[in-house]
Length: 55
Image (cartoon, rainbow, N blue to C red; front, side, top):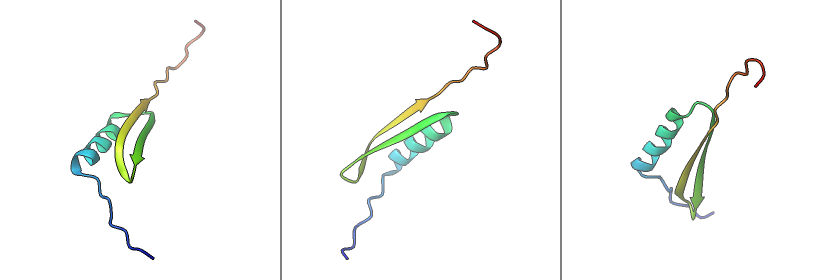
């Protein structure tokens, strides 16, 4: 078995991920990885409204 060096993201990337998590109430955080490196963070937020009667 070949030992692999850990690819630890830098602090700025981790801070961005944590901020996205704290900033969202409902939705998804998508982290895109290429060649074992984080290249993109997407935040998809959902807003839900309580329906009161008809339109």
